[in-house]
Image 1: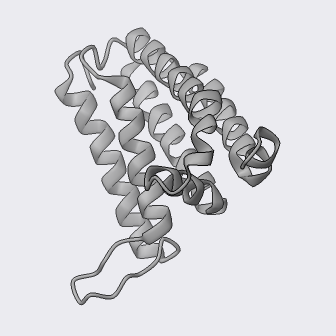
Image 2 (image 1 turned 60 degrees about the horizontal axis):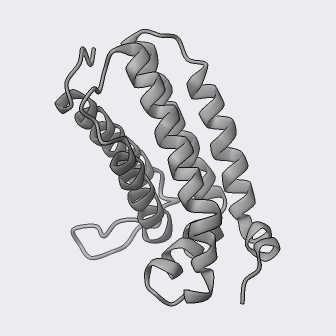
Length: 164
């Protein structure tokens, strides 16, 4: 059974600290739509970099998602749920301040970022020839980062508000 101290040691405490620090930086961004978009994409990049630098974190979550880690259920209640709520509230605050993304389901956007970053960080992508360049392949990483930015921007654009 994983205890709180052991999952913090496995990198989850670091994820919370990294995310919280990046969230504070996001909250401090300028109030314009452009500044907010840039800060939000910076936040996403920080999370991606953290996960690539600490692959045990996405591995732990993916294990739980596969129902192989029932003993890890306490992590969701004690760590993931509150952290997602904190991130969603912070993102909503900066979007509202900038007058963009009025219709964004911020919680689902956060989950979308987490799911895709964790999957990419663990498996990379499958190339057309069937080869799987890992997440450390710079061309794949650049392509994934651009795509992730496009997803976030697309959600903001479709949700209403200025978006510029």
